[in-house]
Image 1 (cartoon, rainbow, N blue to C red):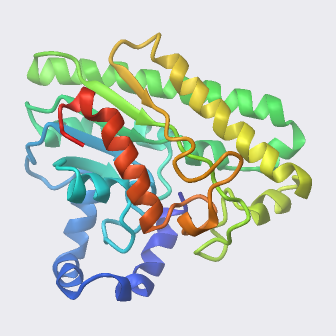
Image 2: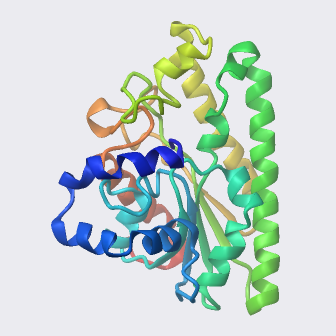
Length: 284
């Protein structure tokens, strides 16, 4: 869930891990790919039943398939056609304020019935020094803000869909993140949110890094679970324990401290597709 600008810098360093045809297709019109894939801004309808708004768990490198993220897993291995606005570094607050949910609904067209969400991690991890100064109060404040933004996104998105296309409200499915591995190094120097180095530089003691990381992750998941009793069109999927935690993910399944590698994302994709199949009607 690193900075979107850092993604631009490192795309070229990942070229060797993808096949030539895919790279050629991507760079034939990279700007258009980025606009369509990361911002659902193709300028024409892309009729699908499923939309997605997400962070680097769904698109690590501006649509370039260097790492098979959750979106790629769903599209390539589980039969999903997705209209998405997925971008590394994306926050829930920014996605909502930019109206990306409206954009995805508009681009997906009248048959859209489900929105998949992978958001909240960057909102939780920004300015870690605030946790060092007052951990519980900071955690509570951020979870409260995420909950409010998420509920307003759902309510306003449903209102937009009903006014534009009619029919039933959308189904909104969000995944909770799995446990991280703060001891893994960042792939991008300086983009180490969620890593032990970032916690320590923010003033968190070394012995508290793992405790803080697990506490934030669990609280976020339970907050999402609570919203299901308040929003009838909202569904939460628990992906914890997919990658070997608690308390931390297995090193061999992680690209860095917060992102799974290809094998890790394959496990996440398999688990997620099974959990959402009864909701989306797509076989896992």
